[in-house]
Amino acid sequence: MRNLLSILEDLKFGETVLVEYSSKAPVYLLFHELIKWSREKNYPILVDDFLDTLHMYKAQMEVAGIDTSLLNDLNVIKMGGNIKIGNILGKISITESAVLEREYDKIFSKLSEDEIINPVLGFDKLFIFYSDRKDFLSTIHGMLKYLGNKKRITFYFINVDLIKSALPEVLPIMEEIATAVISIEEKDEFKINIRKLINI
Image (cartoon, rainbow, N blue to C red; front, side):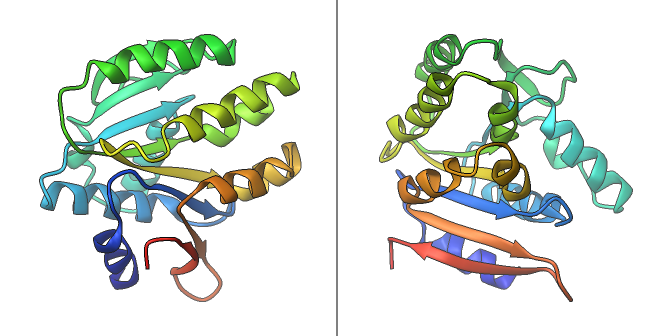
């Protein structure tokens, strides 16, 4: 994970990072390292949890024998789903993208921390859930709106297999918005590839 740590150390608040992975990649390992690094740096953490993806990561960690106690007191905004992990700051319906964005903004604006690490889990599932193209555009706009927000570094964990099968044109738009794109390779060993870094 040395490669990951060097990337994390170089990031600045206001950045948006895409973490791309395939359905077979052990992405929970990278998520665990991100949470551990954030704790060591004393950065507050806010997890955006779409459709109980945080529960999936936690369950995979437990099966792999990884200590999950550092997830217990995470601040979480839940979008859909009903499995409670961490300190739930708010729960938002995902039936309409405009409602989701408005309700999210209300919760986020109440946070008092100056700088937070913001992993976004399961965001890619929205592109299966929504059928109207304007919902896709509204969802992407929500990502763009927070780009450059000096209050946070955001990490969008994106299953590229899912995106490419649901709406392939979304991935290049997200990569264009992001200030950094990293991907997980799982051929012979867990490896992180840097595909884009604006802050060099």
